[in-house]
Amino acid sequence: ALILVLNGPNLNLLGAREPDHYGRVGLAGIQAGLERTANAAGHRLHFVQSNAESELIEAIHAAGRDGVGFILFNPAAFTHTSIALRDALLAVAIPFIEVHLSNVHAREPFRAHSYFSDIAVGVVTGLGAQGYDLALRAALARLDPDNT
Ligand code: DQA
Image 1 (cartoon, rainbow, N blue to C red):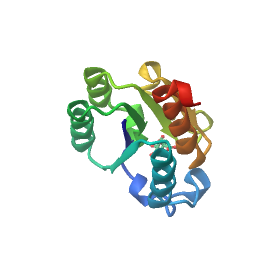
Image 2: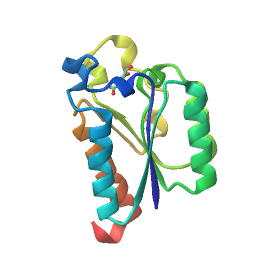
Image 3: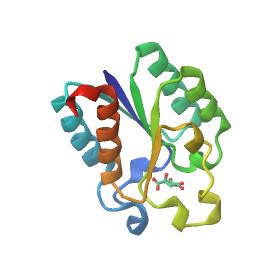
C-alpha cells in the first residue's frame, strides 16, 4: 500500500529547533529511516511537510484520491487548533496514527488537547524520532496482519 507521512508547521526545522524538546535528528533523517522500513515490507512511502494548513488539507484530499492505505500524521501546532484538518481526515476516512516527538502532556496545558486523538487509530507522543518508526511498524502490522 501507499503510506503517507504528513508533517505540519515548523517540522522542517527539526534537528535545529528546540532540540531539548524535539531532538537532534532532522526530518530528512527520519524520512530515510521510514522509507527503508516501508520498502523492506513491500510498501511505498510518500513524505510531505508543509507549514500551511491548506497544503496539509490538500495532501489529505490527494491521499483519498490516490488510495493511500494509512497516514502517519504529526500535525504539529495544528494539533491544538485545526478543525479543518480533522474534517479532512474524517472526509477521506483513511486510518491514521497521530505522532508527536515531544510528550505533549508534559508541556504547556494547551498542548494536552488534540483535535485528532479521538479519531486516530492511536497516538505516539514523547518518544522523539523513534515515535515515527514505532507508528510505522504499527501501521505495517495493520496493513499486513499475516506478516507480523
Ligand atoms: C509537536 C507538539 C506540538 O505541540 C508542537 O506545536 C509541535 C510539535 C511534537 O511533535 O512534539 O510543533 O507536534
